[in-house]
Length: 67
Image (cartoon, rainbow, N blue to C red; front, top):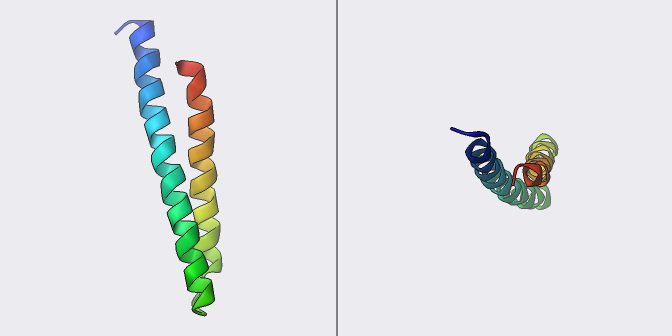
């Protein structure tokens, strides 16, 4: 593969992964909020949700340089 195709492939993989992680992180954060309202254990689950969400944002933002 030439350099241009590698960049487009990397952009595609990284941007789609970022979108999936961002959506998953938001869903996990909402679920952690529901757990908190029900009185269940939520702190570490919510912290993990924020980490997943931030990782997704970082991947999406970083993918722009490969387009």
